[in-house]
Length: 515
Image (tube, rainbow, N blue to C red; front, side, top):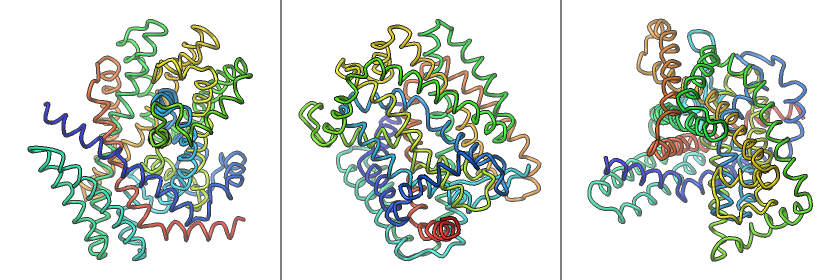
């Protein structure tokens, strides 16, 4: 078991190491340039459409554009918005919040592109509902789209960076772990060869799509299920002394009632839940701001100043500020991981770019708005200097304004955010399971007969794992889930780079018709 955990810890460090951080932000910057800064020049159009027309049926699909956005926000607005922001500030100082904002800004272009490809290459399940996401974009896009040589060369550079980083890291390892590292590096080199030469692109896309689905399906039960129910049960126990088993049972039952109805019921529920929980948390945080109104100007000034000096961090390490801000920003809004494309693929829309305009609001709401509520509260109250971290740091900030009531406020936020995350990730995991099942059972008629049973079995397993997560000490589950979550980004980012000409084409045509 020790050797397995050594491998998991090593791979987790790789997938969330410097290369993936650079490539996640780099892909966002690249897409921002290719699309002409769409997140800035089209932000107003996106907000107007989402608010005033987003609840209308625009075309074929299962849920409204607004419901699709709420489902994705339900998936990203989780304990990372409370604990993750606090962790970033603890390790990186107040300036880390600025770099979270920067990450979200470039991530909006990434999320736009993910949403577009999700709709452009979606298909249908036997019950008539949509199935789409990075797996479809990789499989169908690599097979059907006319891929630019420049796109392949960019993707090749992407893969070579990973291969070089893993190969270098392997030199510092020993025994079997070193051999495994070299094998993984070799696999990346083989992939780079196929991308550079343009050979068997349909097969490459299929393999990448299957890998993405495998990583996502496993991650769903960890980062989107057990870790969330564990945090929720802990919060209920600390704040209200509710037994872990009782929380686990109630949480499982409530989740099953919603998720058994599929994306339509999840969309309807999150349409009501997400605005409610966002407003509740907004009121709590603004209450802190009002109490510490005199400290707000200096707090905001400190965030901007520390972002470029790092003086608030031991040793004045500016690199530490950026690293933690970027890492927690990416973890918070998930732009580049490919999760949101699955929900947006279910939207009722007549054009991929129309829904992509809605999709890009996700990182804006998640990080620039909700994470700011947490981060500014922590800095303005001075709680960031206490030495506390994670949820305890956020609780300290709220307690300074409201006493014990403030701590309960944070717990309520954790409960609402965790529950919304579990609902969204249920759908994400289900879509990937169905994609893999379709791949294994190639006969459409047999798959159609199997589909209802798979749907029921999946939802039963989902709530069983919720109960296990709520009543068990997870130990290594967090690390394993984090690793799987990060692995999803690699095939997804490859798809975004290789298919950027498809993204650009849809975007230019739509904007020309909808200025």
